[in-house]
Length: 135
Image 1 (tube, rainbow, N blue to C red):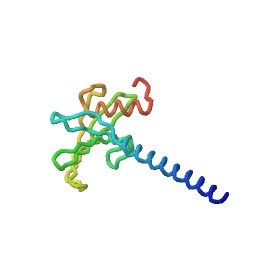
Image 2 (cartoon, rainbow, N blue to C red):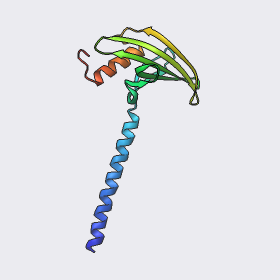
Image 3 (tube, rainbow, N blue to C red):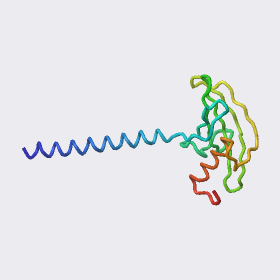
Image 4 (spheres, rainbow, N blue to C red):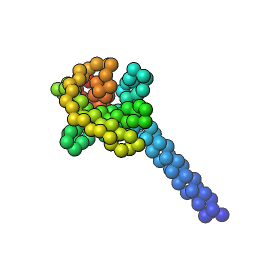
């Protein structure tokens, strides 16, 4: 009887642990993207938090912003520097059903501290996330 009681306690503890881990994993997936604005049609721009400032071949360390529209996904690669307050869009990519259709290398300077631009809001989010001085 003692063994059965112990087994029940152990199984309960394992079940609670598994449920806790599953809840944490769901929470982490839900926080992968942060909304950093909307276009004129009301479609959101989403910052990928998991790739913030990771190195992207040919473009260096970038922030990635995504937008879905009409079965297409646009990826905007943004290079930012919190200390220098510099911000520029360095590439635009278009995907359909996971297949890259286009990639355009650009160099478009963006005002870093505006509230009406997804790249600026992404930079602000990133600089706050890393506790950059002045942000």
